[in-house]
Length: 325
Image (cartoon, rainbow, N blue to C red; front, side, top):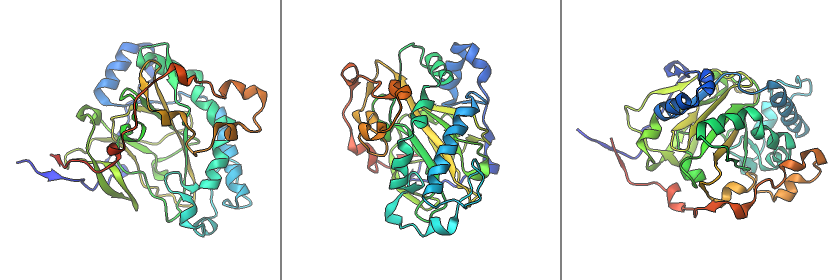
């Protein structure tokens, strides 16, 4: 018998997960790489990225947290320890609840050239040339860095698809990687394997770890094939915009979890214009202010006149038709 649902509560624990299947060896066999991506709706790579530039970025982000008084004065330069008491005194209306810190602090993070350099790492560009089967790979400039904390206004990201949030081409891929080691206890991203095969799912209001949203994906009770695992610095997971994913609630509460979301697509696919804007809603000239000439190649590297656009559809972020399970 079929039943209808607006959303099924999804409470996934680390013990429920199937480990990621590692795909590094398929980088030498692109056709098999693409076949696995089509089958599973994700690809996981251990040690794909050089840890050094990632840790340099981590140090910069932690310095910003320290400058805002959110870390103990004796904290190690690379550990994620937080001053929880001070953090929790920050007013909720100042927080970017999707990011984990205040809007002011996120502005400072978005101005780091190291953040905008990492998505152009040769290992990532090589991956997407093979995965998308083209030499014309476009890197979205709208990079997201999350510095998730235990502030009462924040919570784990609920199950969702990226397409309603990004739009443009459904062939856009998200790359997620931690900026530092990230065990399951620190709340990394997990994937609902093969969920992309369902196509675009209706949105539904959902509560996940205290995070209410009306754009969570409606799931059925039997959709439980979640995959995940511990991440070491340099590990990467990537998935198309129709794959359902979420983050685990963090068990470790006195540390910040720093991660990046970066998006890639074929250069001749359509894009939605917001994907060319800064995620902190800063003007690009504000972002670039104070950058040295060695980072000039990162500034306005895209030509908007050479891209094809699709219009923004606000209805994709509104609760949709109840899904039949």
